[in-house]
Length: 241
Image (cartoon, rainbow, N blue to C red; front, side, top):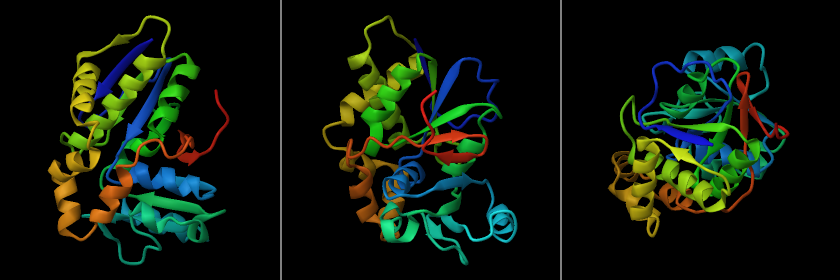
């Protein structure tokens, strides 16, 4: 089994081959998506641009909720922002949600057309690692990053996946230097993920705009076994395979 990490968002990804992709945007898109499915969301359609979200909501996906952000703030006209605390059962159960965020939704759309992507956060980290192992495939972990650059919190989460797989695997595992670097960062910060968030660029920004409670929520580890799956432009709770 081979594990690799893209520590900055890729401009282009080669065809998947036999790889399974794991997408991370801890603050906050993948934490929010995981929470939405914990609370009974039917499906999520990630899109890159605000205009596309409105077009789908007014056409092919009429009746769907629209969620997401720009600059960390809810977009005018959207039903939901990008705080996982907004995605409660009474808001999202049985709903399809169109989502666009600055980094996370674009990361999904960067995957090859026929790729399978797992949605990962600290909330479901162990379950994601187990899913990767059961797939029997090589794994590419994608950090959504911060507007095309490096993201500390996404890299630490990636390292947690590497470490969790290492603990469970019985066969030989080959990890790239970037995956090893992520694992080292995880080992350094795993004792206080909230403090790591507070040190990170985006974590500091979220505190400035009054979203510190989201940091506390997103720092929770392994609170669910829900593993949302991205295939063919849509996220759902697909059967394994």
